[in-house]
Image (cartoon, rainbow, N blue to C red; front, side, top):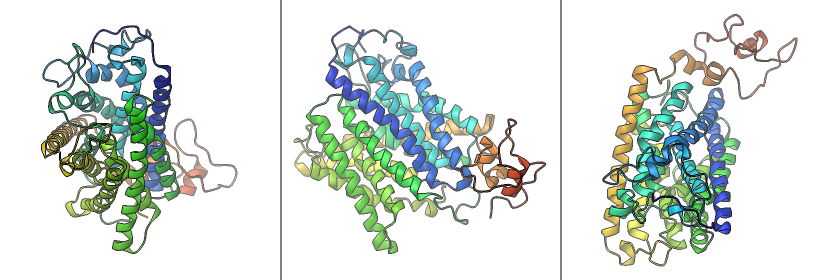
Length: 463
């Protein structure tokens, strides 16, 4: 970016972006509840902690070096920003706006960082129930630097003045309003790579692994939908007509995504489920993320419906191809991101804020080709880089949890806690000691040996 200057800020737009940033932050606990309800009860706290851990690590890494890599002056070819330019937000604390127009640059930086936090948090769903928590935190830090920051530079960093941004946004001229490539395709491809390298859960394809708490799933989906308005409409960076159009499109795509997914379930299975409804909302929101500024409200409904149908069918592919995408990150975020990003080339309308006509609106195939190139490059880079990171961590410090611990459940083994204290032991209330182990009463209630509560009995976890 060009040197920061002190200029008056637009207080109205600043207030809106502050609120939008808070909404995006709320998506992290929303995602934690959404994922937490989808796993089995023995690992719900671990799943929630993986998302919260991604939030903590991602925020620190982004301030230290991530923002500079993503939005610093380009080092050449539109591939990466200068990592030292804004190291630890250096020079950004004064009332400076620079290339962010009339917004405080620190606020813009934090808003963008929250996108990266959500992206790395999404990956956790693909490797649920089988990852070491400590190694996961290391993965989050490395992935933010090696994968997310470069892709964000490619697609989000616009050239301005003497500042040269990323190649996708400025040379390829791909349209990605709020992160179909950097967030959705990126997290989905990374999740697929991580799931393949770590391998499937014990019993995958054989044992039932149903969501243990659909109430949490629905609550999490509601919080995600609420936060998504900040995610998409906040990306307008102004409290104006663009934000309003994007807000409407986000609402409509989530709605038609849910209805389409429920329709597929009703025709295929005979039942429209709450789990399907929640999944359909997320699928519609994923697909509208890149296209929310490029399509009309009618187009948004079509995008959401397409995503609801395609993603409802795609989540079953893991059983056909044998990869254990635990919580359907691939089926929803990768596939939904591909649908939404490609749909811009077909359904974009010059009447929408982005001002570009797609193929079906008489604009030719040019924009569709641009979208397809961005999709393929993002998918390939994220997949290959993530596979290398996970492989390296697995071979050095270990990433896959021990088989016995996986069978017992990560909540008790990793965190020395259980999500649901449903048993009352005689002689007092069950509790966890300072040593991290469980008391004898709690161990007996859980069916574990009182003298070695950390060691599962034979067959524990398969019941």
